[in-house]
Length: 295
Image: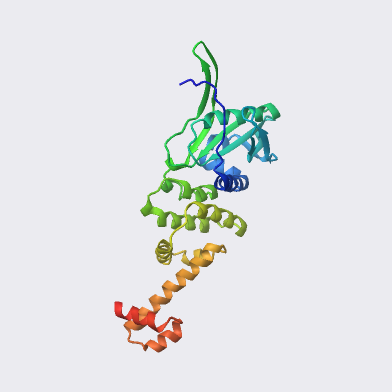
């Protein structure tokens, strides 16, 4: 339905919004090709990734309310086998905003006014609400002025299971923002770690992906213990425990604790002396006695 123009006033939600933008910027700037490959294959197939250039962080002053707005993900590229230069603008949005479509149009207008080049606008939506407008129309009852279209990726509408076989670093990171139930949280994290192992990324990229994932899906201690028990049964368990990132150091400790208790239980089942078990496992005698009572 056509709408009359309204003033844009973005609600940044202070530090949480800034952090959200920064996380997405780092992820997509680092894995720009992989981002398009997994979510926008038609664009991916038409860009020459040997000639891409991140533009400086663009700061524009809104013509409507005078507020400054930084466009973090703006990348210049060429179309394959041509000299046509295009600009890809990716805008992350973490909360529902009913005039977001108008804001996308203003960003498009400001970028086009500065660069005078074709622009591919993409909105990445990561909120639970179903709102997903992909165009902005400016019209009057007597005259249609313009209809502006942009691409959308609504992550909550994506089924995380569809991406666990992709071995794509962006897909792995964004599993944390996709649609999953509370009961699936541990399984999502487990598949994420398996993807990291298969991709064999360098430690810096592993930390980036893990840091993004952990920002949106952080397990409780109970869930972490469940995760470590499940990982311990996997063929690639040792590789997962050796991932050189902060969480996995913690996970390794949790996994060791679980295996230590399992060893203690096995020794108790063989009637090994409690003091000897404590000496070998370094567990407290009181804890060993509790394990004994559970047999």
